[in-house]
Structure formats: structure tokens, C-alpha cells
Amino acid sequence: MEAEHKIISNNPVADGVPSPTKEVTMADARLVDAEEPEDHTYDYDLIVIGGGSGGLAAAKEAGRLGKKVALLDFVVPTPTGTTWGLGGTCVNVGCIPKKLMHQAALLGESLKDAQHYGWAVPDNVNHDWEKMVNAVQDHIGSLNWGYRVALREKNVNYLNAYGVFVDSHTLECTDRAKKVTRVTARRFLVATGGRPKYPDIPGDREFGITSDDFFSLPTPPGKTLVVGASYVALECAGFVRGLGYDTTVMVRSILLRGFDQQLANMIGQYMECHGIKFVRSAVPTKVEKLESGKLRVTFQQDGVEGVEEYDTVMWAIGREAETKKIGLDKAGVQVDRIGKIHTVMERTNVPHIYAIGDIIVDEPSQRSLELTPVAIKAGILLVRRLYAGSTQPMDYINVPTTVFTPIEYGAIGYSEEDAIAQFGEDNLEIYHSYFKPLEWTIAERDDNVCYAKLICDKRDSERVVGFHVLGPNAGEITQGFGTAMKAGATKSTFDATVGIHPTTAEEFTTLEVTKRSGVEAQKKGC
Ligand code: FAD
Ligand code: NDP
Image 1 (cartoon, helix red, strand yellow):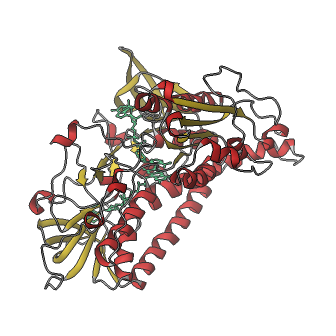
Image 2 (cartoon, protein in one colour):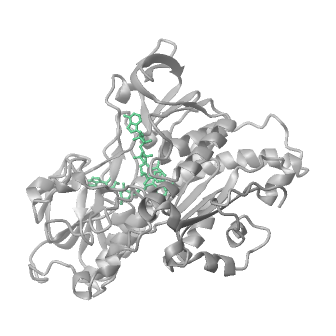
Image 3 (cartoon, protein in one colour):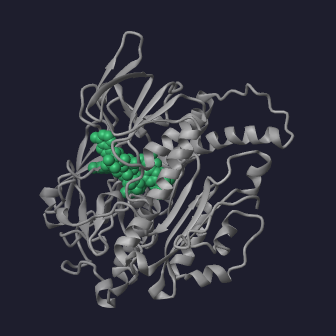
């Protein structure tokens, strides 16, 4: 259990060092199991367990390469009975509904802006929760269907069944009607993802919900408590408030652990200014349902007991890898204390069993990145190494990410805190600037809440080791600069880039003020 003692980051911004996977030799890069012959009598060449982001991508790629593939996907209902179709977390209860509801909230803000631009928008515009949920769920339904078709087109056999290993080549599959069958394969890919944790306090499962239930709530959430302070909590609290509901976030310690704390705190301030309440240094201890239907939450705050009533209580306190009930012990696959599988080039300790996505810790980089594009890319690259002679490893370093809070935060590489710890403060030059998007001026939105920061390694020609942007469309901006970071951009590369005017991203081509100088980085006008 050595891995438990290592520092494992589940946060892509806590990195930035050259990738250890780049050091892999060509021979290592063919790290596929050659212990058994490719000619075999198993039912399948490859069985993929889990039809989420990673599993679907890998299964389709293996099917495209002419392999005999089966993919199992089965959703165990939540404690309140919510279930969904093929596609996994991202499509059904993650990225997709989250981003659509984030957009619904942003549109509400745009309606206010629109008045300043001359549109006669009435003051009492209402939002229809049910209509939004139906539209979102309809879109998800079309995606579920699309995945089924795509699997069929790639000749992947889709089994809507829950898979459990009985030995390292055999899976027992239980379908919805509890019919049990067995299938065998030469190789397996475990891509079972994660499910939300519950705090294990009285009333948590009975009265609380998680992101697995939230996006299909048939009625408006009303006064909402979100417990947790990372991606899921802040994103959900952001759009719930944006849609007009009384929203409180209960924070145990800090916001967005692992991210640059200057920007994390700026997000907190922005959210507070936009009506979101924060209960800090607090943890819930009990949830009860009152006769009125309200949920009474008892919590401890700095050793003092507090009580408050809500209509909806949502746990957003992290996710648990779905690895504990799938017979990995029978197959000989080791997991760590929290259920993560430690892999080298997505290979587990059992040569013919591989794993990708939310359930893994990549040993060389010590990264455990719970992000859809990471699962997809790792799955596709693995299958190409297994079946198409590729030698390309997955690179878990400098993965761009964005937190879709009401003001979006995009990040690549080191946070300021981690960069100082890694390189030493004297070896860094940090360029920064506050800015106000042009579109916000007429709309009379706040000054100096948007922010750009580049952290540069002075000893390496000011190579950019940390990129941080807070502002509208940060996801779109960060994606582009992600390529620059992958290519090893330095501050002078950014300076040599001609801006696109008037945009917010151009801010990164004109950064001049260093933190060290102490010169005012706030802006007036644009
Ligand atoms: P999953 O997508 O979780 O798929 C695993 C599948 O396997 C599930 O369908 C599960 O039911 C099935 N399964 C489990 N066990 C078995 C079994 N024994 N037999 C058969 N089937 C089984 N990431 C981003 O990049 N951007 C975002 O904006 C983003 N937003 C998110 C918002 C929320 C609210 C959440 C919760 C997550 C978000 N994520 C986001 C993370 C992203 O959803 C995950 O990283 C991604 O889905 C992981 O893919 P995966 O293939 O590892 O697993
Ligand atoms: P995280 O593991 O990132 O964060 C968990 C949060 O819950 C922390 O703030 C933690 O506080 C708090 N917490 C943990 N246990 C308790 C408890 N018992 N009581 C109170 N608070 C508690 O989980 P998330 O669910 O937010 O996200 C999971 C992953 O999903 C992310 O790491 C991310 O990779 C992915 N994701 C990506 C998104 C994107 O790309 N935009 C969006 C959403 C999710 P503390 O700091 O004190 O430990």
C-alpha cells in the first residue's frame, strides 16, 4: 500500500513539470501484455467494463480496429431511485447537464445586460425549471441513443449488465432482469468511473441528494444547501443561484483545494457578491425532514452547533471509485485504500487487465485526473498501443481544466503556491493583470473581477509553468492556451503573439506588470 503515502494530485493544475511519460522508451511504450498469445478461445478479444467517457471511446476504437469487443454498462440507481442511460457520468449527470444549466444561468445575466443594450426586457422575467430540465434531459436522451448507434456501427456488442470478475478472464454479468451470464475475454479494460460520496450522517441518503439526482429534479430545488467546496459544489451552487434560488455553500476548509488560492478566493468573493451564502469552517452532522416538508440541517461550525432549514440538500463532497464491488480481488487486481487502481500506461498489476478514467492513479505522474477528455484520450491511446502498433503514451501533465462557476476559472500547470514550493519564489516571475471585458462596460458590471496570471520559470527562459484566467468563456480561452503550454511556450512566446481585439484572451499577449514589482495591476477602461 505504498501508494497511499505518496502525494497524489487529483487536480490537473498541481503540475507543470516535464512529463515523466515523455522519458518512456520505445520498448516501454509497447508495454502491452505479450504473456498470452493473441490467438485465443475466449469469447472476446476485449471486454470493456463501463460505458462512460473512457470506456465508450476505447471500445469504439477497438471495434474500428477490427477487434471482437463487448462493452458492459449498468447504472445502479441512486438511493432516491434516479437512474439513466448509456454514456456514463459526463453525459448523464456531469459535464453535459452541468454546462447546460450553467448556460441557463448565464442567459439570466445576459437578460439583465440586454436592458443596458436597449432591449426592452421586462423586469419580472421568470425561469421555468421544469422546461429547462426537460430540454436538458431530451438532449441527454438523444446522446444516449447516439452512443448505442455508434457502438453498433463499430460492431461492439453492448451488454446492459453489471459486470463482476469471477477470475482474471471471466466476468459474471447480471442484467436488469437479474439474469446472470458469463463472458470471457483475452483482455479487459476497467472503466467503471466513480459515484458521489455521502457524508455518513443521519438522514444523508434519505433526505439528501447528489449531482446524480440533481440534474433531473422534476421540481425546482427551492432554498438549497450545497455541501462541499470544490468543482461540483461551486459549479452547482453557481447555477442554482443564477436561476434565482436561495443558495448556501457549506465549506469545510478552503475553496477549490489544489487550485491557485488567489483565484479560488476571487471566485468565492464573486459568488458572495452575486448572492450566494457561504457557511465556512462548517460540517453537517444531521438532516431531518420536518412536517412542513423542509429539511432541517444541523451542523458544527468552529465547535458551535448551528441549525438551518432548506428545501434541498445536495452533497458535493467528492466521488468514490467504483472498484470495490466488481471482484477485482478475484482477478488479482490491486486497489489502494480509497479504491483507486494504480496503473503504468493504463496497465494494472495484472498484465492483461487495463484501467482508465476516474478510477486510476497514473503511477509515473502520480496524477488521478477525474476529467472526461483525460479518460477518452487515455482509452484511445491505449487501444492503439494494444492493437495498432502505436507507441504513444498518455501524457497526464499540463492538462487544461476549467471550473464553470458563475465567473469561469481556467487553469493549466502550477498554482502559485505549488510553483513557489517547486521552483522557489526567487526563481519565478509572475505576471498579472485585472481586466474588464468590453461587453461588461455598457452592462455596468463590476470592475476588476476578471484576472489573468502567468507564472514563469526564470531559469528556463521564463517558460510558462502556470496559466490562470478568471472571466467569461475561460474554458474556450484556456483550451487554446493549452496547446501553447504543451508546445513549451515562454513569456516571450506570449509577448510575440498578436492579440485579437477586442477580446479578453488578448490580455495574455500584453501582460507587463509583475507581482514582484508591486505595481498596481488593476485596470480602468479597456
Ligand atoms: P464514467 O463516465 O463515470 O462511466 C463509468 C460507467 O461505468 C458508468 O456508466 C457506470 O454506471 C458504469 N459501471 C460502473 N460499474 C460497472 C459494472 N460493474 N458493470 C457495468 N457498468 C458499470 N469532467 C470534465 O472534463 N468537464 C466537466 O465539465 C465535468 N463536469 C462534471 C460535473 C459533475 C457534476 C461531475 C460529477 C463530473 C464532472 N466531470 C467533468 C468529470 C467527468 O464526468 C468524469 O471524469 C468522466 O465521466 C469519467 O469517465 P469514466 O469513463 O472514468 O467513468
Ligand atoms: P473533490 O474531491 O474535488 O472535492 C470534494 C470537496 O468536498 C472538497 O471541497 C472537500 O473539502 C469537501 N468535503 C469532502 N468531504 C467532506 C465532508 N465530509 N464534509 C464536508 N465537506 C467535505 O470533489 P468534487 O465532487 O467537487 O469533484 C470530483 C471530481 O470531478 C473533480 O476532482 C473533477 O476532476 C471532476 N469534475 C470536473 C469538473 C470540470 O471539469 N469542470 C466539474 C465537476 C467535477 P476539503 O478541501 O476540506 O477536503
